[in-house]
Image (cartoon, rainbow, N blue to C red):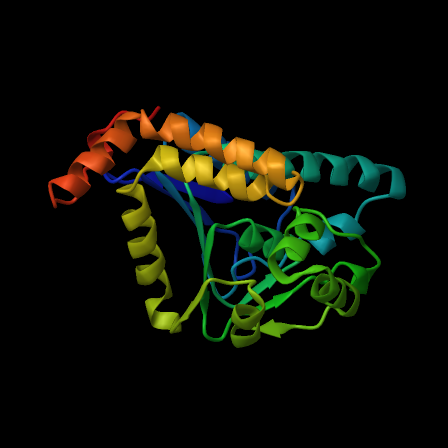
Length: 262
């Protein structure tokens, strides 16, 4: 089994990659991540936590597997791998549930894409990030060429994509690639705590916010203002919106977990 999914009582779906120390992505891993994303969707997860077992979060594609194939086989194989991996990313991006990642060791290639796809990315203090693709004559996948410019800016993105230099956690934080740095021994606990807190929040509002932010760089200002107005009006009359306002006026903590998700 390449990936496991466990959904706890708070609605946190923990997806854990488990393939040796590097969690390299072969076709089986890509399909396992797609199945995991589908399970998060089916389970109605309120937050998703993506982690990797072992020393490294994910070192990218399985180059040994790729090298063993003929050119014709490799084209077909990589198409299958990216179809599955990108399918997983599409599902996770479309959920209302926020995505949290916890990165230890290396996040390289597609591993960088998985880390960058998160709404909140926690990194161990000794973690490192590298694009890696052009260093082996490949171009990016896993959304890397989409997410990096949005997170760190086009100029820095090109630097990372062309030089493949390793970015330590502190620099990744400074450039906006990660959200928070924590000590290695506290990485899992803090990521779980954050995911659990999000799972207790307003899932519908999170989903609307995710969609607004994702669309903000492709929409004109006026178009985006219209989208904000529509989302706000829908949120205000939702069960979550009514509960949030009622709780604020009553000076109590809102209970979003029992408000039906719109």
